[in-house]
Amino acid sequence: MRFYRKGSHDLKKTWMKILTATMLVFGVMAPATGFASDNTPPKAIDEKLGVPIVVYGANLSEAEKESVKKSLKVNEEPEIEEITVSGQDLVKYIKDSNSSSRMYSSAKITRRDVGEGLVIEIVTPTNITQVTSEMYANAMLTAGIEDATVQVAAPKAVTGHSALVGIYKAYEVTTGETLDIERTDVANEELSVATSIAESAGVDDAKVAELLTEIKKQIAELKPATREEVEKIVQEQLNKLDINLSEKDRQLLVDLMDKISKLDIDFSKWSEQLNDISNTIQEKFGSLMEDKGFWESVKSFFANLKDTISSWFN
Image 1 (cartoon, one colour):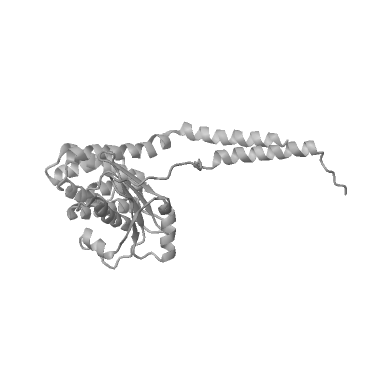
Image 2 (tube, rainbow, N blue to C red):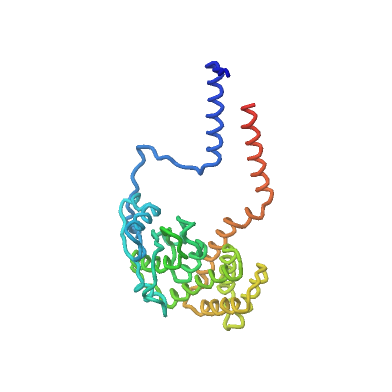
């Protein structure tokens, strides 16, 4: 058997093809990453709104806590305040709750200027198994939390419910305000109903978030005075979104929305904030998922890319 060595010119051309193809594929497939230059100014402490507050679930081990710190990029903040949320806090914010509950999900909350609204990010999406960012936003609005950036993280798979209690505690610390316990309790019920509907009725998380948002928008606009009026709003939105619930789930939803309609809320202001959540849901899930032409163009692009790269080596 003989071995043939390519000439240096041919070998160089082959390696250039491989390098070019590799850079092209990874340039397309990899997420965009920004590289800060050495002279990038350090992140400044916000003297007006205060430093971010990181709240850790009380049942985290030291290793898990370090994992959460990394996920929340705690070391990138020039200064932070750190607190812990436990089962005792759960009892404070949510009626008839269990003080022995395990608390793992954690969060970082940063205040924003008035009118800037809520920005919610789940930075460990595979570990928050039931609650979506839109569900958090809806529940936080019900609880009376406004104008904040919130990042949620967990070191292992959890439902994500306890993060909401941590957010309550952190919000009170960072603003100096006291949340209405009636509202925080209903907000927790809202989160439970949302995750229950998504699981038992097999409704997509995004659609559940849209359902809750649209019902609340109608409550803010129409200001129903009776349970029957609330029930009518709920049924209209279920029909509009083509969602079929069991009678048990439908009654849970009506009960929840009836409680929300009776909360001490400035519904005129609430309507604008709900529109922001609604727009976010539509931008995130609406047109893109419905645009079949978009996904066909993506498939076509990668098919053509594969053929192009293959031709270089023929």
